Amino acid sequence: MAVQSRAVQNKRDANGALTGKPGTVYDVNIKYNTPEGKKSYAKRGFLTKKEATQHEAEMRTKLQNPVYAAVNTLNTKLTVKEYLDEWVENHGKANLRPSTFSAYKSHIKTQILPHIGHIQLKQLTPAALDNMFQKLSEAGYAQATMRYVQRILSVSMEAARKYRYIEHNPARDIITKFGKQGKTPDPYTIEQMRQFMSKIIGTSWEMPVVLGGLYGLRISEIIGMRWQNVDIEKMQFSVVEQMPFKVPAGTKTITEMAPTKSNDRILPITDDTLPYFMRQFELQERQKAFVRAGGGEYYDNDLVIAKADGSPCRRETVSADFGHLIRGLEMPHIRFHDLRHTAATNMHQLTGDFYTVGEILGHTLKGIGMTLGISTNLEAVTALYVDVRLERKKEVLDTYHKAVHTKEKDTVDGEQKKKQKKKSNDIDL
Image (cartoon, rainbow, N blue to C red):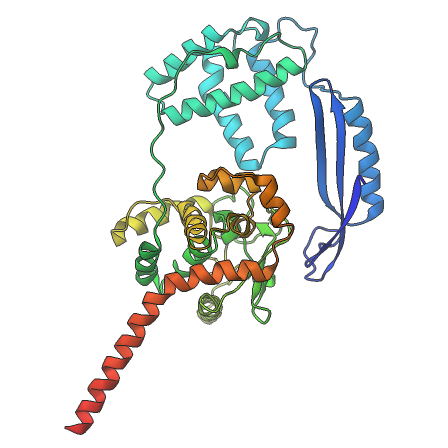
């Protein structure tokens, strides 16, 4: 069926706000044929079956009679600039995440258009693109940047080919060879995570590192998590929203969050991480009291991670400050996002269950396999794990969290025993 119902734990209301109550939503899944082969379309989370059915009918009509109104195909003098400006607006807003859309527009404006924007689209050749990449290299651009530019051109020119604006995709026939990009930092080992955690306990970095390094949450999911989605009694929290892309500097209140890439992601709070949640809540209560006692205004956005006055954190600031933190603690260099890689790698090494790890991280099956460098029979794995329940997620997270905290607990217990022994000896004397 094209329209299917699905139970959720935290349904949104007609305004898009989370209600905190379970309910039923409806998903639209359409398979259709094109000259290029079979394709599929999906949109999830309709509040009513009527809305889903209406959308399904509208999309069937559009998909069976595709119309791309970006440019006039009869205009043989269409330039690369005119085409890319139209393409990125139409394609980007509909298909790309805000961060990717922004990156595409920036690279098109900065690296592509100054070199080939004036060329007529039908006259664009692989040689012209190779010449552009040579100029970018001479200008000092990194290999990763040029590879990203090639990716944008490949995607955009393939769209132009499919819509019969050009005969061939020139980006597919370039001879430029891109060198290796800078090595991605190695994720922290369990021992390094123990060392790192011991250095940030009791600081403002404690909770962000727990969510990033022990649960594998994305930075936008961390700074966008709200207490209304944390259930201490049930020992679980939901990852259902994230901080919007590019929050302006000086923002004090957030009225609307952005949806996450993965829906209905519920993760358990383990015995080892519960104290962090409790300390974070108590810390914010104290901060709230101090600000108000001093006559200041506390911006209660209900955020789990926030500034001292309750206002939201910006992802750019968190990333930059994390770099300073790592250098100050003399820990091996990693980016904040590498905490996510750390969680994925360590959970997989301890349990071997990459499917459940993918569910915890909100990855697709293919995505987590690529992250961990695993080549496997995905269909067989999917057949084995039809549904990863909260209990299995808890088993995997428990295994990892206990591994990180075991030595720390042994150290604390050892220190306590030494103090008790010393106290006993003092009494004997």
